[in-house]
Length: 308
Image (cartoon, rainbow, N blue to C red; front, side, top):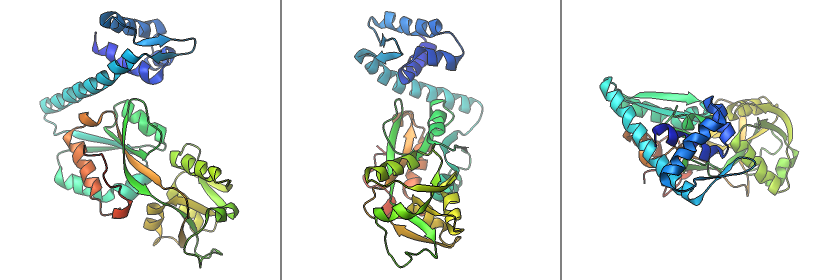
C-alpha cells in the first residue's frame, strides 16, 4: 500500500462517494477504485460496500480508517516538522475561524502567544462559514478550527470549551428597557436582524426557537453578529447574539442587553484532524486560550477535554 492509497481511502470514507472523490482529485472513478481495491487485496477483506448511490464503510473499513487517520496524521506532522527543521524554520501554527471570533475571543491570546513564541509563524485563515473552517482543516490549511459545536463531524475531533448564553440586543430606547430578562414568547414581536443561512450558530438558534413554537419575522439580514448589534443600535431591529459579542460592544453602541429565559446556550470549541497529533505549539495556544482574561470565567466550560 502507498500513502496515496491511504489518502484516497480516507477521502472516500469521509465522502462515502467514489465519484465525488474523483472529481475533487481531478481523476477518474476507476482510478479511485483501483486504490481502494489494492488496499482490500492487501488486507484480504472488503473495506467498502458498493451501493447504487455511493458506498458505505464496512466494520473492517471503519476500524482501518480510525488507525489510518491517526497514523497518517502523525506521519504528516513529522514530515512537516522535519522539513521546517531542514529549512531553518521555527514552525508555524494555522488556525481557522470567523473574523469576529478572532476579535472577541482571541485578541489577548494572540498577543500572549506571540510574546511567548516570537519565532513561530501564527497563520489565521479567516472563514465566513462553519463549512469553510472544516474544509480548511481537512485540506490541511490549518491545524485548529474554532467553531460552533454541533453534531459530530466525520474524520475530525471536537472539544467544547466555551458555553455562552444567548441575549436579546435592542436599541437603548426599546419599550421593555425596564426588564432584567425577556421570555421566549417576547421574541415573537421583535423585528429580527438575522444572520445568513450559512451560519451554524444561527441555524441552531432558530431550531431551538422553532421547538418552542417561535418563528421570528426577519427585518434585515447581515453577515455577522457585530453588524447585527450595530444595526440594532441604529434602530433597524433587534438581534439575538452570544452574550460575549454584545458585552464587548455595549460601550461602543447605544444598546440594551437582555438575557433570554429558558433558551439553551450556544457552545463554541476547537476542532482538529487528530487531537493526539497536534504540535506542541497548538496545545500551548489552547492552554493559553483557557486562561483568556477577555472571556469571563463562567463562560469557560469546566472539565474540558482539550488538554487530554
